[in-house]
Length: 223
Image (cartoon, rainbow, N blue to C red; front, side, top):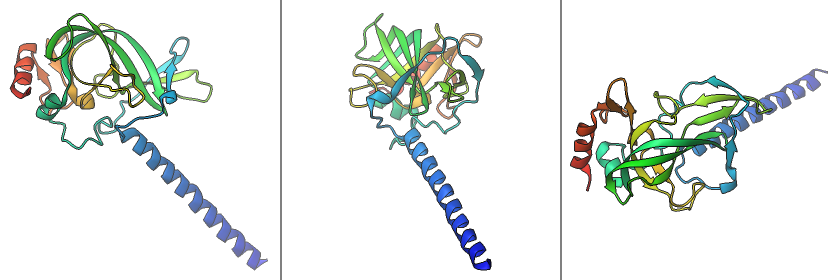
């Protein structure tokens, strides 16, 4: 009997170790997915319909800016401006929400109101993917949490920003000709109307600037 109990105890310990080992491995895989800049598997970008869903407010992603975590360069203003394909001032016209393997994304359709740098066209509409949106709270997909990539919250239709952007080449889940922020949250100055300034997520780069000062700063670093 004693021998049987010892055997059962050993198998229980093995089972617990396997469980936590698998859990740790899954968490590592999730973290790698969150921090990778080379997204693939186009079929994994699934549209999220928010109509008729119960939506709750959720904390921001709090993942140390996962869009930029795997980049080789430090997200300084000099680096992200020099690495950008275009820099534009634009207004959000419409928003679509997507899920990529449990990671929320939004596709912003933006009207270009001013071209600050690069080969963009005034008054054209461009699509910009940003890491924010909605997460499902349960298996029935009836409840959603709003998840933002920064402290400013989700984008809204009518928002104005100065976007520092990299053009997609079609080699990942985002279609060719669309854009992503060059260094994630670090490379979008969103206009705060009540303060009459453009606000960026990382205060180390310079958090609040009037439009003229912002464009002067960009000109200093643009190649």
